[in-house]
Image (cartoon, rainbow, N blue to C red; front, side):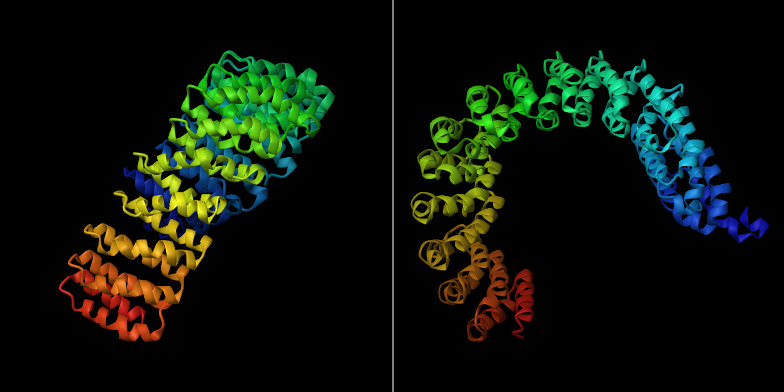
Length: 589
């Protein structure tokens, strides 16, 4: 086509048209992703007059292609000639905002929101606002759901007459027949409220909020709860009690557990939004009910918020509220039938000790921690152990140590390797809090046992755990307690355990320093170069390369070099390769 006219400037669009009509989806997708390059080649004038109309007319494609197109058009402002021509991008995006696939619509709305900022107030009224109206009064629910996301971006910058129209359209969509549209309106209610003048928040938004919060569909009601946070932050304190609280109380006792779950999930944000007075009178009883809810999911969501809720209570009567209202519920949850609830509670309960202080912690919280340390669910025990530092600050860990130990040992020997792995990760933290004597007496043997675990991930984690312990307790401790045990494994009949010795030496050499490495570790590594198993021999070469920088040059030349040279002529290919690599890295050639 382009050749016939002899006009090279038409070539890019001809190629695009060919590729967009190609049967292969991947080709079509690639050509859409190159749109900006094509637009650059065409120049702004022809992008506006040829490329955009072509794209607008050919929007019947795979969702993947449309998604890429919606994304590309959001970054097209400069390619159509800057902000004064940005309205040219509206027709294709309008079509994309009405397609059936949600992901494509959402991306088109995102791009429309982006380019709305680049419209001048006049263009916004002439071009953008009519588009929003068309979408809002479209026949298909798809266009009406898309419109919901566009009201808040154009509202602040249009004249008061147009503002009134926008509010009217939003009101209409909030009572649309289709639940999907009401859901979209509810999800944008908070965002829209933020750009409205306060008088309209009271006259328009509150009635809509109340209506949506008592919608027949629970998926709409739970979105109204989210909007509640935004609306409550906008209103003066004296209006909250009459305008927002009745609806919030109703949501906290909704017949659908999803709505109650949403209230529990947003509880800390709601608490900050409504202020201390309402929290004390209304939210405390509501929170108690959520902690006792009949649905486990709701109890778990509320349990997750216990610490945050208590932290945000007004200081003057925080302790009294917690002790008389919250703690009784928490005590019940410790022995809940559902493990997710117990686990959620275990991840935050330790934080209460810093709020309640030493005496209350010892009297009321300590028995709960001890109960949870004996829980049959490993996740509950783990969550308690992982948050020990909070308690350590308040009462010291000695109070817990007698119960801690059996819990740690059980987790360390748990049948699930992921549980074992998780407890290893907390070992350095525990070691620091329990002190070196307690550690040597009770936990050292555990740490050594992990080195010969049958799961490689555990052996690997145990090795790095040793390094962290040496960093905590010092090289002398390592020399007396760790190094002899690690080196003893070099004679183990199982080659995997012999290899673990090498991995430990790699990890420990730097922390232990030159003297221990040269005098105690190096002889063992060199002796292992005669191992019958090739895997061990090539790991000897890798270890020598790793610990080489720690050794002095004399040891490198007289002890390491001969062994590496011997390994470099080994019968096994891998051993040769790693030995040669070590020789070149350590510059021993």
